[in-house]
Length: 444
Image 1 (tube, rainbow, N blue to C red):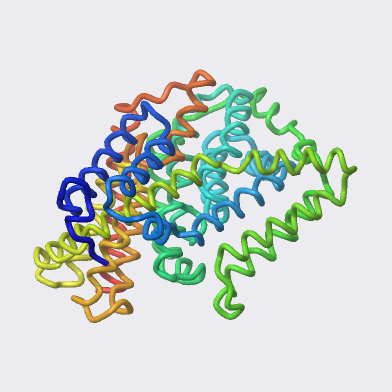
Image 2: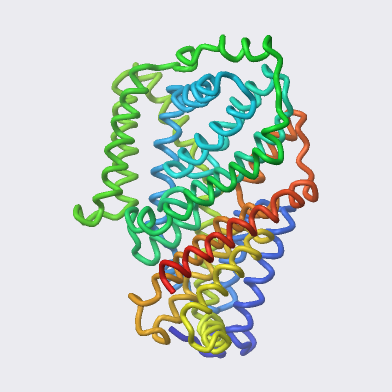
């Protein structure tokens, strides 16, 4: 859809107006001076007020399936977390490693990666990091290597599935890729990347870690069962989460969208949670559950969808797509590699959520050049791998990074941008190099 310059105030070119608004929005988000949801909503409002598009067209750009999936999963996690199941898993992981620091470091990475593939990575680190800090305190070992490794594991594990990382949620929803598609195409390379990552972390930190016998005994004395606060809720949560995961797997056969599955699952678990309590307690739980939904993230997405749609309406994305196809000579493999590496490097310095939201319509406009939408599926896997793994490169690359850094700073574990980057950026480039070998071998 195109708009003429006369629809924009003062006869300005809608493409350049939309582009300027996008750049200003991104620049303000990166400064972190004002909450990013506020900036995104202001940018969206400016797109409409200045005349790049009207309100009806702006709302067409909002992906409600993505928002429903995010909200539903947030509700499920909020209720499940109250049972104590996630803390139970972390304590068990420490004890399975016999309280040896290197073993705990490995198992907490594996735990974080698995949880991140089933939950979103921010939620995962919010659950795992406090337990990690408690365990490292008992062992009297430096917590920084553990937190660093969990950042990497959360972003790597989240890359493996549709629901693990917000960029994948965006790609899956807007392109029509299923939960099974992501598992089939991305999980194999993610397993390799995770193994290499774990080896690298062990070589840098793990092999040098030691704890006293007394400290190890303290961790082994911790009771995993004591972390379970509500056994009935635990059983209910596990049952509903299992059904929801099965729903994602068989979504196509059921002819259901991910948002429907997540929201219905959330509603059922809320109902079960309410039945188990008095009306006063039930009302409190409902308010608490909805308070736990990350409304900042939800409204950030709404504003971002509208801003990006404005750029799409203005015509910039079509222009850029044609330029990229021309620069790569119309070669699918070269285009895929360009998307993979550009996504990785840029996502290290720009939040990967707005970046992916911008890239999706850009890649869609390339479809005619490569024979149709069915022919460009490898480009989506390049985008996902680049954006999700690239987010590990710096502290500002992904939301999980900043979340862990914030918790660390509050607990006396400083996260310096440069220190983190010196370790993280080379490891990120290594994971992307592995991904390039994989996409070359499998698709090109």
